[in-house]
Image (cartoon, rainbow, N blue to C red; front, side, top):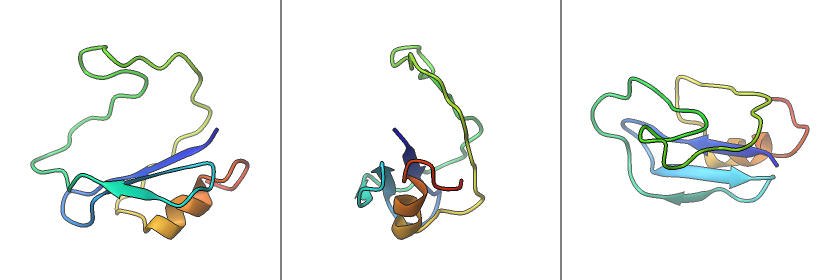
Length: 78
């Protein structure tokens, strides 16, 4: 599986795309300051990932939903 997630402090709602599907949006922007990202578990260790992360890309701006869709295709370039 390949997952693409987008969020922003100031623009657009959060979005998620899995395996090349159309991005699903919801929620809102993140207020305040994001200073860390937890990979594999939440801050309280409630949601733990029992799998491997083989690649990760972080961008300094929110990607459009069409870009999320193309980046979530299995074997597509990051």
